[in-house]
Length: 192
Image (cartoon, rainbow, N blue to C red; front, top):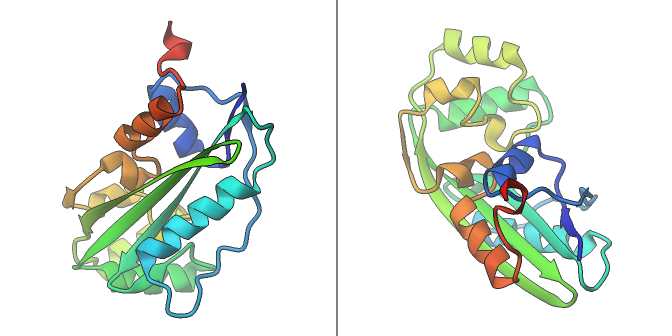
């Protein structure tokens, strides 16, 4: 049995390592992540995680783990910004407000799929023009849902969270550990 991480995220790889889990292979799937018309953030996130795990090629006995993280401002899905202008738009929308960060995980072995999603609340402080422009200049917003990562320079903008810090980073560890154990995958293998 091989353990395959269906994600190219270095953050997810690092988080798995804290559980002593080192993938045998990394195979990020290439799927269309465009939200459907009128699709709400939580069902969207669960759908994308499921499509990712189904898209990864694996043997029947292999275990495949995929996740998707979505930033939701009300009913609006804030994906990965296309450019600095869109990143600024997202950050100005989040500035001074609470929003949700949803991470859905999907684990597959053969035809059996385990799924879980975690919703956390995050408050971003009101951003000054100076803070916004300095942050945009770091390019840390690139490839990040909602144009920020809580573990990066934008951590200075987040005075309050409620929920799973690791879920906000991109892989809720308590829930991931539970799914891996349900599938019979032992944790802390690399630390023994």
